[in-house]
Length: 323
Image 1 (cartoon, helix red, strand yellow):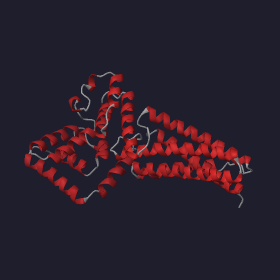
Image 2 (image 1 turned 90 degrees about the vertical axis):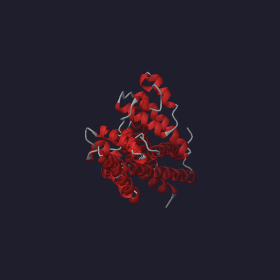
Image 3 (image 1 turned 180 degrees about the horizontal axis):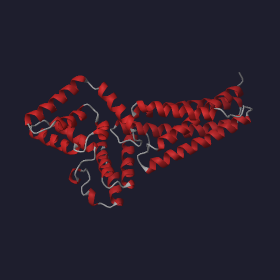
Image 4 (image 1 turned 120 degrees about the horizontal axis):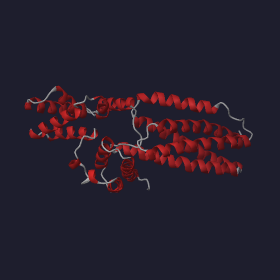
């Protein structure tokens, strides 16, 4: 097989994968947590479409058959991916996105070497452009994964089905003895106090079994009050672990008071000052508390975006990515 034929075959594969990349980016737009992320995903999708066109034009210039089937296949692949990933946690969906980008990067690198060998400078320049684009996307997805690993909230929001899938996966993989001990302690605390209902137990147990994400969607109207009572009783009885679990669950729901926030006087700050203050946070937990609180109270997009950038900076440091 000649080098030109190898290049043609690889360009065909790149068109298919790039069309899939574009559609994946477009499906992710609806999952963007902030307007800034939404704009970035839209730009990524548009850039992928432009890359598809450039690859196709290069394919034609080498005598390859004009591609009319591959784009449709790419779109179908993305639709199927989006459908099937609803049964998987968000982190698994993101890992699949990352695999796609790595494959695009590896193929583009291979095409660059093939082009150098075949003395095809135009193809080589295209390959270099693709390499730069996919390196940037790999880095962005790596940071998003790190945000999720740090406890989030990540730049992309899980769909309701992915939240449930993630909660179930965590519950299945949780150490049985840890869960059993935590639940037993929580139940004992509530029963000993004699002041709790089964709803309180559900709140603490739900958090203990790592189903907080799903709980945010399914708990009843009185969940915040139940968690506060569970926390109060647990602290009174000296059960710090159960109390902390209840508080963490409250924080996930955005149910914290202004004096519990990591930024003093946060409620009295205007949008500009609030965003500036948020950028100074360094602890993932503190950033999460602010984001949840802001989303459930004033919901100022610029403040939420600033908090997301602060979390991204921490995530970049965790994975060794330069800012």
